[in-house]
Image 1: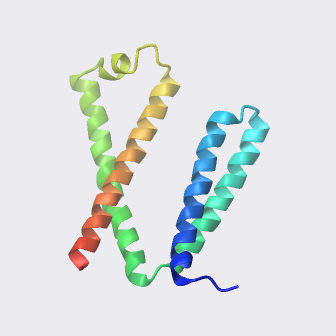
Image 2: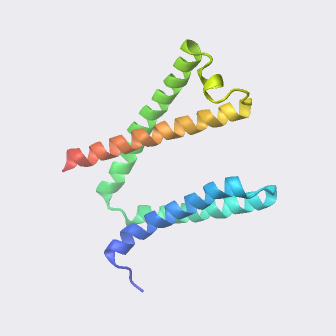
Amino acid sequence: MALSPSLRRTLPIVLTLVFALLLGVSVSLVQHPVAFLAWAVISLVATAAASIFCWRALDEVAREAHKTAWMWGGSFGMVVAFLAFIAAEHHWPHLLETGLGGGRSPADLVELGLIGVVSAQLVGYLLVWAGWWIAKR
């Protein structure tokens, strides 16, 4: 069965988002450690397979856009996040502790840092990716 060109472009993206969403849901819903690990591995393998399928469907220009956006946007976003956390720690030492309701464990703060850095990387990626396509059009 041959897929139409529009379905061939959209299906991998939808599958990747669905599998990533399932992985996120598994973090909060699956309580048993072995069941969580199995669910996480299945979700990660399915997400990787859908991502590879999506990557192979792209032409060379689109691949270059993604690689450039991740390198420059992701790197810049990571630096911005690190500088923001360092500035918050030195200039506003109680911002993180009281801004989160206080009483957070070190593990909670590490999780906050990871989410903050990955979020900043994604924002940087999206900005550079959009800029790439605006510049090429």
